[in-house]
Length: 520
Image (cartoon, rainbow, N blue to C red; front, side, top):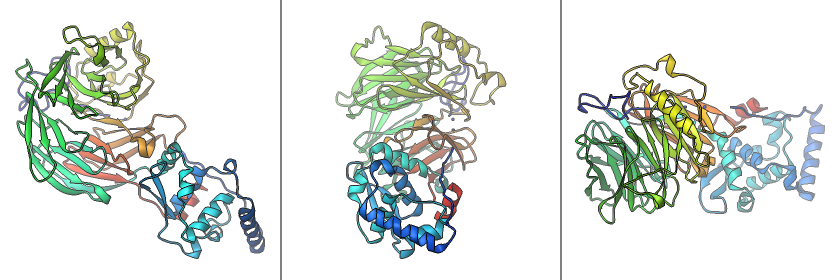
């Protein structure tokens, strides 16, 4: 987590975040139109013919893209998607406005006969206007179609949620999205109720044994406890269930006099805690046994990021200031002779954060070389790649915590042996360990990578070619955005910034007529 080589010594008070600074990085739409009729009578005749055709010969699935149909109705405000039960986890709900103006006659007035809706769309729209529920219709959408639809409703509007007197370091949603956890340099951990569209402060917990700041937080999978770490020999576990507040210090028994866990992750079953520390080691603490069960000498420098590869919790990912990502298999791991199953090389400077896609295949890494890389662990880096990355790191003689990025550090060509799938640029990684993540599976199909930025922005970029939009930049903070968290089921992102602000980014619809005219 240190800035340049040999910059990790000293007192935390003298070197704010002596091993804890870094950051992260990216639209097209299509429309169709048809020429208007020469007279209102011919237009009415065509609509009558369309209605007759709908009643007699409904269009087949091949005649209409159902995803586009639903996207159109969503833009018109006639239906809305909610998180619920069903084959796709979505329900199609009747609009609040069911006037005759919004029935099939509305095509003429709102779009000027420039768009000919498919027969299925007219049938759906007319049925909605009569109060008919479309559970059967909704079930015909695959999960992929639903997530593709929701990419048209990415966050574009910011609202203020809270302000602290000091820097906000961490902010994450719980697994079910019902709570938001925030950690600030004022040593307070705040828990917000985010159910039913709320964002209300539920509880404030005073963190214990804090040096410099709380540096990482996470929920346990059951949502009953939170974990946090700082410059301390301990990871702290705090119960948030009910009115009581129970703190438990989990002793990692490190050998270093000055010790800090920069990154935390909880196993899927909630029994184990994974941590990465400034001594270059990975730690596993077993909550049932109440002791450290594994210590791996993993990297040559600070371990700034750790993650479980999937729900099995057998594969571990780690990222370090040595610019390498490593993959570990606990089934073959020996503490006395630790060997990773593979290594990923291609960054030129230290890694600040990693995030697993959860499929034991893909992960992303954010780096001080001002890039995010997408990796496929089926393709590890060769020896020449490891050597090239190590050499590039030794040539870095600037400190990202205090200095601006030198031009020589912005090299674009790939290193020899770089096996990354993609490299993303355009965000700033300065001052602190800035986070970048995959977007949620439910609402987006994980097709976006989004990140904080040292310039106070949130950067979102599609990692799949051909998807809308390829890149989004959201501005709204006066200092670096260290953490970002996308709601697992709703279309909003919460950003936590060093300007002390916590803000929410949501999708706000323009007037249906204006939006449709832009698309036509």
